Image (cartoon, rainbow, N blue to C red; front, side, top):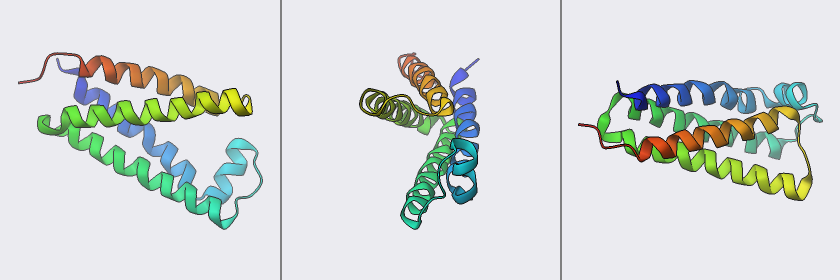
Length: 127
């Protein structure tokens, strides 16, 4: 049984609600989730752009789950996104201190998902 498509589906389904939480109604979700002040227009713009990025990647991961031809590239983007986000969070931990508990949980998830993606990339090619 090939776990790669299942992993890519799980990644796509896992990031979609995060994306929507960031960008669908950020003026409500950010204060509710992270106890922040209401967002100004520039922060709203950034959050909606991040939502678009996450949803685009989720779409690509679905393509990779469905098409063997795109599977490796999809796994590479999972690895790069999670490693990049995790690296930024580690830097922020060192420079800014601990964040909200949910953002710390995201760091743990990103490390695990990046590690699984790296492991899957090292498996023999599919036929």
